[in-house]
Amino acid sequence: MTSQSQGIQQLLQAEKRAKDKLEEAKKRKGKRLKQAKEEATAEIDHYRLQREKEFRNKETNVMGSQGNFSTKIEEQTTEAIRNLTSSYHRNMESMMKKLLSTICDISPEIHPNFRPAV
Image (cartoon, rainbow, N blue to C red; front, side, top):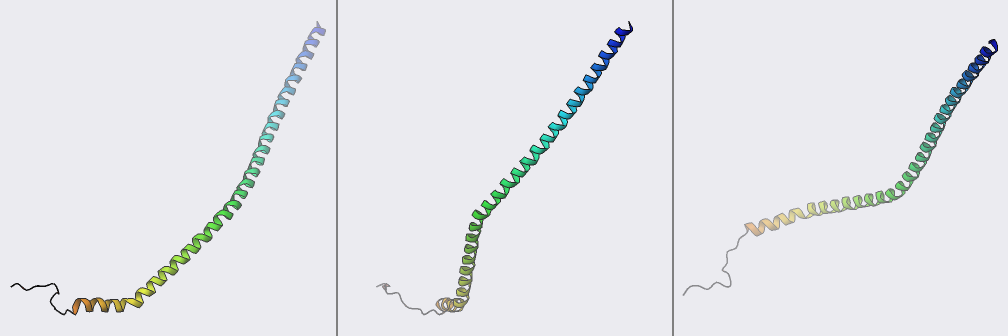
Protein backbone atom coordinates (compact mmCIF):
# COMPACT_ATOMS: atom_id res chain seq x y z
CA MET A 1 0.00 0.00 0.00
CA THR A 2 2.81 2.32 0.66
CA SER A 3 3.96 1.98 -2.91
CA GLN A 4 0.48 2.98 -4.06
CA SER A 5 0.47 6.01 -1.79
CA GLN A 6 3.96 6.90 -3.00
CA GLY A 7 2.76 6.60 -6.60
CA ILE A 8 -0.23 8.82 -5.81
CA GLN A 9 2.07 11.33 -4.11
CA GLN A 10 4.35 11.34 -7.13
CA LEU A 11 1.37 11.89 -9.42
CA LEU A 12 0.10 14.74 -7.26
CA GLN A 13 3.57 16.31 -7.21
CA ALA A 14 3.86 15.92 -10.98
CA GLU A 15 0.42 17.48 -11.41
CA LYS A 16 1.43 20.37 -9.15
CA ARG A 17 4.65 20.92 -11.14
CA ALA A 18 2.65 20.85 -14.36
CA LYS A 19 0.22 23.46 -12.96
CA ASP A 20 3.16 25.62 -11.85
CA LYS A 21 4.73 25.36 -15.32
CA LEU A 22 1.41 26.26 -16.95
CA GLU A 23 0.98 29.28 -14.68
CA GLU A 24 4.56 30.34 -15.38
CA ALA A 25 3.99 29.95 -19.14
CA LYS A 26 0.78 32.00 -18.89
CA LYS A 27 2.68 34.74 -17.02
CA ARG A 28 5.45 34.72 -19.65
CA LYS A 29 2.83 34.86 -22.40
CA GLY A 30 1.09 37.78 -20.68
CA LYS A 31 4.42 39.60 -20.27
CA ARG A 32 5.30 38.99 -23.92
CA LEU A 33 1.89 40.22 -25.09
CA LYS A 34 2.25 43.32 -22.96
CA GLN A 35 5.76 43.92 -24.30
CA ALA A 36 4.58 43.38 -27.90
CA LYS A 37 1.72 45.82 -27.32
CA GLU A 38 4.13 48.45 -25.95
CA GLU A 39 6.47 47.93 -28.92
CA ALA A 40 3.58 48.27 -31.35
CA THR A 41 2.38 51.43 -29.60
CA ALA A 42 5.90 52.90 -29.75
CA GLU A 43 6.18 52.03 -33.44
CA ILE A 44 2.75 53.56 -34.16
CA ASP A 45 3.71 56.74 -32.28
CA HIS A 46 6.97 56.97 -34.21
CA TYR A 47 5.15 56.51 -37.52
CA ARG A 48 2.51 59.08 -36.55
CA LEU A 49 5.16 61.65 -35.61
CA GLN A 50 6.97 61.04 -38.88
CA ARG A 51 3.79 61.49 -40.94
CA GLU A 52 2.80 64.62 -38.98
CA LYS A 53 6.25 66.09 -39.61
CA GLU A 54 5.91 65.40 -43.35
CA PHE A 55 2.42 66.93 -43.31
CA ARG A 56 3.66 70.06 -41.54
CA ASN A 57 6.47 70.43 -44.09
CA LYS A 58 4.03 70.14 -46.99
CA GLU A 59 1.59 72.48 -45.27
CA THR A 60 4.36 75.03 -44.70
CA ASN A 61 5.35 74.84 -48.37
CA VAL A 62 1.77 75.33 -49.54
CA MET A 63 0.60 77.78 -46.90
CA GLY A 64 3.89 79.66 -46.97
CA SER A 65 3.28 80.68 -50.56
CA GLN A 66 -0.27 81.68 -49.66
CA GLY A 67 1.10 83.66 -46.74
CA ASN A 68 3.31 85.58 -49.18
CA PHE A 69 0.27 86.39 -51.31
CA SER A 70 -1.69 87.64 -48.33
CA THR A 71 1.27 89.76 -47.24
CA LYS A 72 1.54 91.27 -50.73
CA ILE A 73 -2.20 91.96 -50.83
CA GLU A 74 -2.05 93.63 -47.40
CA GLU A 75 0.86 95.80 -48.54
CA GLN A 76 -0.99 96.81 -51.73
CA THR A 77 -4.13 97.62 -49.74
CA THR A 78 -2.18 99.71 -47.25
CA GLU A 79 -0.49 101.57 -50.11
CA ALA A 80 -3.84 102.23 -51.83
CA ILE A 81 -5.34 103.54 -48.57
CA ARG A 82 -2.31 105.77 -48.04
CA ASN A 83 -2.63 107.17 -51.60
CA LEU A 84 -6.36 107.82 -51.19
CA THR A 85 -5.82 109.54 -47.84
CA SER A 86 -3.09 111.81 -49.20
CA SER A 87 -5.23 112.64 -52.26
CA TYR A 88 -8.14 113.47 -49.96
CA HIS A 89 -6.03 115.84 -47.87
CA ARG A 90 -4.54 117.51 -50.97
CA ASN A 91 -7.88 118.10 -52.69
CA MET A 92 -10.19 118.66 -49.72
CA GLU A 93 -9.52 122.42 -49.42
CA SER A 94 -10.06 123.24 -53.10
CA MET A 95 -13.20 121.09 -53.33
CA MET A 96 -14.69 122.73 -50.23
CA LYS A 97 -14.04 126.17 -51.77
CA LYS A 98 -15.70 125.12 -55.03
CA LEU A 99 -18.73 123.69 -53.24
CA LEU A 100 -19.15 126.74 -51.01
CA SER A 101 -18.75 129.14 -53.92
CA THR A 102 -21.32 127.24 -55.96
CA ILE A 103 -23.79 127.21 -53.06
CA CYS A 104 -23.19 130.71 -51.64
CA ASP A 105 -22.41 132.81 -54.70
CA ILE A 106 -25.81 133.00 -56.33
CA SER A 107 -26.31 135.21 -59.35
CA PRO A 108 -30.00 135.38 -60.20
CA GLU A 109 -30.80 135.29 -63.89
CA ILE A 110 -33.77 134.33 -65.98
CA HIS A 111 -33.79 130.92 -67.47
CA PRO A 112 -33.44 130.92 -71.26
CA ASN A 113 -36.68 128.98 -71.72
CA PHE A 114 -38.75 131.41 -69.68
CA ARG A 115 -41.59 133.09 -71.63
CA PRO A 116 -43.31 135.96 -70.02
CA ALA A 117 -47.09 135.73 -69.87
CA VAL A 118 -48.72 138.01 -72.43
